[in-house]
Length: 94
Image (cartoon, rainbow, N blue to C red; front, top):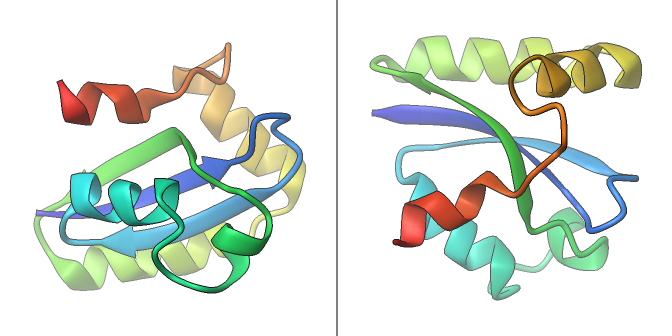
């Protein structure tokens, strides 16, 4: 399976859209700041949205689509399934 996901920081000010084939591992990497870059610099470790795909091409196309959206549209997408902006990542580590 492949996943597109949206991360934010504790204040929900910055968003990051990514794609991976192993969401629990990737969340661990973000949360423990194992990879230098945008998510580490802005402390993005709260999973607020994700989608699952069986084909990598579909996941990459969706990632590119979301990255092209304005912030308000991304907020609306997140709030359609996670209106409180809860951290959904905890569910992957139970």
